[in-house]
Image (tube, rainbow, N blue to C red; front, side, top):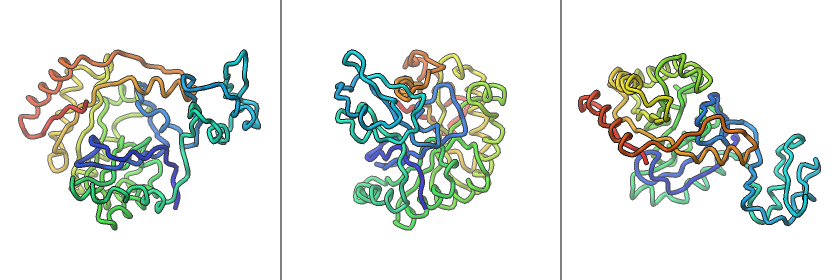
Length: 303
């Protein structure tokens, strides 16, 4: 049993209770214009290039059999046209300006890293969190990894967009203590325009988790000029209050710009750029949600 992992982040404090290790899986069915982890969109391995780190050594030129790397006037030039993402250039890059995004790993290999911090989990109430990308895109591997974590006595979280197979989600639910469930936009039209797919299947899967009695934290990105409206605020509250058996908390996640530079390093032209939301506005949005939820659902801000 193997999956494609693009990052394992230890000592995370914002992806579930306690101190956690977050395993990021590649592949996502959505295409949110503000995506913070563009390296998780494709299911395939990719090469990321940070030109600011390049020292112009030319090692990548010799390593690449497709001629994607050249040196012109002492500067490195990357032409991705013939790139097959083999990662040979990243293996010889001394400055780490070229990095491979995605590696095939077994469940045991992932768990070897996760279990390094067992004592930290026990002291803090932490554990393993699956993220992405979208774990439902690698559902069999996700379920196997979550089961291995539960067999090891770990607390588990799954961060998901909710867009995917209901059967797969139900299987993962058997080994997930808390779902960090994204709610991005209100209405199918807006969700399709900005995320590439309708939101109705997502709400269906949220209802499934509610029927299974699973604990859910709604994670709501706050994106300037897209979902910063009162209508969306009311939509968040309505969804939270209509799933009283599962949704106990709403987390507001203000837009940040880290995804822009990562997209450029992947050779992707960003389609959305905005300034980070004003902190006062974010607090006002959260206060409005608290009032709508009438104390029945906790509202927090992740910053």
